[in-house]
Amino acid sequence: MTASIPQRLCLSVLLVMTASSALADECVILLHGLARTAESLGKMESALIAAGYRVANIDYPSREATIELLAPTVLEQGLSECRERGADQVSVVTHSMGGILVRYYLQEKTIANLHRVVMLAPPNQGSAVVDAFRHVPGYAWLNGPAGLQLGTDDDSVPLALGPVGFELGIIAGNRTINPILSQFLDNPDDGKVSVASTRVEGMCAFIELPATHAMIMRNDTVIDEVLAYLASGIFAGAGAENGLC
Image 1 (tube, helix red, strand yellow):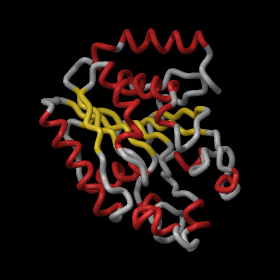
Image 2 (image 1 turned 90 degrees about the vertical axis):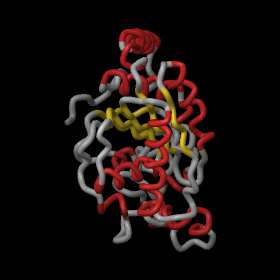
Image 3 (image 1 turned 60 degrees about the vertical axis):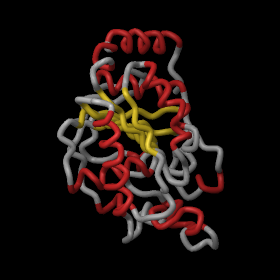
Image 4 (image 1 turned 120 degrees about the vertical axis):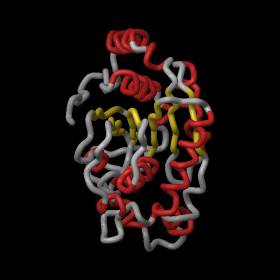
């Protein structure tokens, strides 16, 4: 449900109270989703900068390589940009497949100064949409090799990854404007990923909000919740599940 005015006011107060942590030397890496660009996270980037964070909004060719090749390239670029900005701590905010890149990278490596991660609509249990459409002409061309790894079959990268071992908050959307794709997903869903499939073992907080997969990163309430989690380690809205890890 959309936060009421009192809830939004309480959230604003929380953000003000925790602003000192945001003003620390913390850099946030932003990772967009499949077939998107850094511009899709432009509104999120502006909100983070306004809150006092340094930001590395990474643009990467999501349709041109596998998850195994993208993950180290993308994360190390983000970490390099954060070092250039003089950050003492690093957090990560992802949309969709960006969250799988983080999980894959952290299965093999560590980020010594990692603070928190927020994933928006991540296909942590894969997406049945990929299973249904992978053999449709043009689908592989549109989504590339990484896109074909996001299903729920034997080639699924998300299902091959273990529990997360970092401080993670997940925001799932439960609105869809694509009834064709939604028919292949368990309800509720966001048009690309079911709410249930965004969850992952080891997550610390979870909240479900009225947003679509394509626009969740531009939703004002979602952005407020990202800021709240980065600052405090909890989601502030009604129905939030905190303290899960």
